[in-house]
Image (cartoon, rainbow, N blue to C red):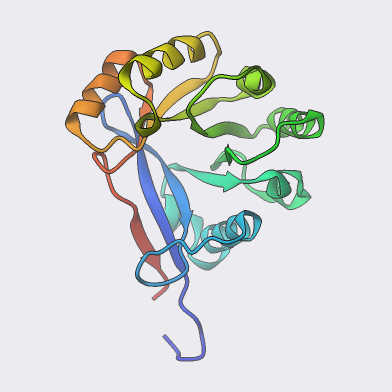
Length: 202
């Protein structure tokens, strides 16, 4: 491409079901050809992922027939720009760094009412403050590398009392994949199922 037009980079990692069939991609900010994230501002990273997916590279090329999980912090959630996304093509993945307060819960409830799907990212412990989000989330992503077997089993048992589907993330070995299957996880993500790949403009 022309030397005065910067290349556009975007990472994506597959999300699969219990049969290892592709059902979605997590869309990842990438700042350079080496595939490094280089994220210093979550809201700006989200804006770049959205721009690159739906404008620069094109949703057909990035997602095909599948959905894209997009990381959102509190600032991105509160922005009205997020409502312009095609709700049938994205899952809003609420970062674990958000402060859960009444304002955030109201906004998540509003987005769900508008038709958006919500996922909770990097879940690794149960606390009462999560209950309002757990009650409305469509998917809970559990970081299995942060938990030993017994705590993981206990957390899955607790989460199964909520309506959300459970996604095991950071699954990196066959042994861990089998264990998560046995625990009853619905969805899976991690190096065992597929490493992030880099998409770039040509």
